[in-house]
Image (cartoon, rainbow, N blue to C red; front, side):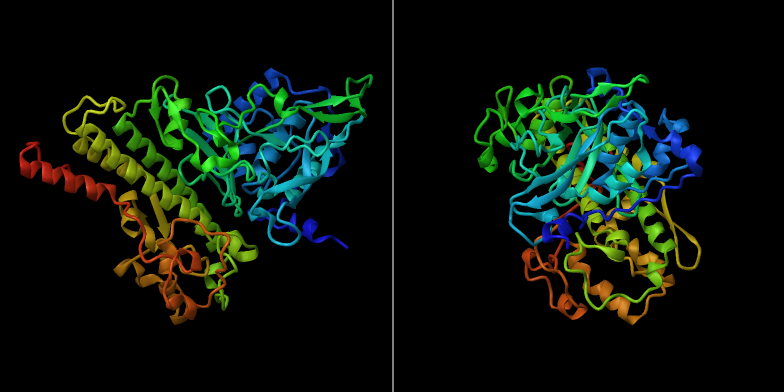
Length: 562
């Protein structure tokens, strides 16, 4: 009988399954994984970085599309295979796929146990998890079929794998990843970004200005691209966030067969002390302090005391961190446009399964952000929370840019004389460039824009049982084609406080009835949401600020209009 912790290892924050189609024994032979290299060399690691970077920039919207795209130089050597992976699976499956194609060894944690003790959900353990079992690719002269190995990874990996102590250094039950330094040589494509609230992404580019571009898969198998922001919460080392890299491993004691394949031997991992870019900087701060007192860490750079996220950008900038405010706004809006396009695909997948035509359950899941079944596959509360955080971060940063301009702050790289006007012009430019639409319940296309999304951000329904109009926050005449009845309408209205919430709460009970939700939020920790979401309408703020400047005679130009 499977123990409780073993069962828990199969509860995934991103529900996992895979479909692999093999066309006969000949194609299965093409999938042979022969290990010919004892270790990953520096050139192998660089090739891995280039491989991830190419997939990140490709125009593909599922993991399977990316693997079959021209961005993958190995696609022509694959058997007939379809890949379905979620956020936790993607780093492992992609790393294993690359290792397979290059004759490299690969090993993985096959089971985890919560440090909290038996029972509970190891995806959200309070004190992290420990490795209790490991596996690796067999080393044989004839090789082994790679497809079942990839399939097994999908069925074993969960975000619980990343939730482990960064100071862990067991030579036998070693962790697959380690904590890297915070600089441009260490945070590279292929680095894992772990969100302690149950999400994992891969870095695919670090821009010269220090912005970290990431991409990730989702339970519905859609792929999204964004930049790493404050939605990736910093924690103590026991929970393993934010940055992780795959630990170097080596095959020892193997024999070389006539065909060059390594046979037998065992896998040995590098200790933390032997990894050149291992560091606890993301927990200790700079100057280094006690990593267990991570909440009080300080972040000094070039004599300036910074918050963690500004420090991170400063460390990852190619030179001195300077904000080009208009370019920053454009980049943030482009990232949000990618997120909205990804959300559109997720909603369409749910609609294609007909979830909106089903009767809603009597209660919400025990937790809407981390559950299983239909809700996990087709709802979007976590995705929507990250989207709202992105809009809030853009709002706060642009307001800060304007304040920096008023005092001529040295970190701001802007030579114009009307920053609010230039920011508004960039807003309307990017708003026009972002094509968002959906097909309503009557079969007609409804055009949206970023500006329209801002106005309805807290009306976007995460509930897959709702009509498409409500999934996109339709109001007035636009909502008239929704075919939801009185029960679903009641649910939609009762969920408004949950939609206002941008902070994901995984440790509270949310299995409420509609009557429970109608009683109001009563505070964040009740799991019933919040009264009001934070301000995100930066366009309105800029227009108001510029109008006040015009009225006071500070600028002569009228407000910018689209």
